[in-house]
Amino acid sequence: MKSVVIFRWGPPYPGREPDGMKYAAECEAAFRTMIDEGVIDRYEWITSASAGEDDMMILWGDTQNLAATMATQEMAQTVAEGRYLMQRFRWDMGLASDKATEVYGAWGAVLMEHATA
Image (cartoon, rainbow, N blue to C red; front, side):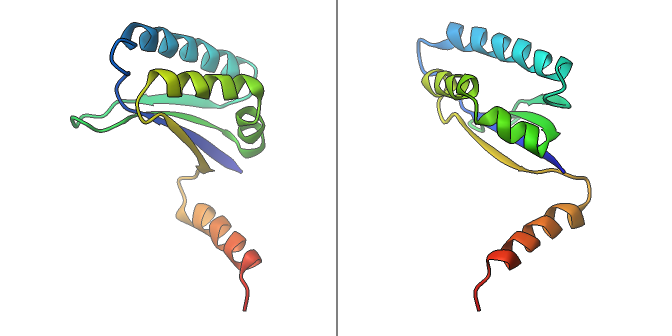
């Protein structure tokens, strides 16, 4: 199954703008390495066209690989640094597909597995 990790963030905290740019470059290098090592399939930067909206970075890959990656100490450090530098920094992980039946079918199966009557 494919999944995505979506990082979201607002502007850098005042005075941390140069460090924010350095952080973005370091993340870019790390994500390229993750592709070379087969940890992720690809990544995308998405900037908001609307003022005041948050930007995103999306990592695409195998569900197990992404979950294992997000559980590492290295990723915990990356997330902590993002929270220090950028306002509203956070991340989420979810299933990914271009077919609604794959994503919502898996979601429905989990709901039914945990449903109580």
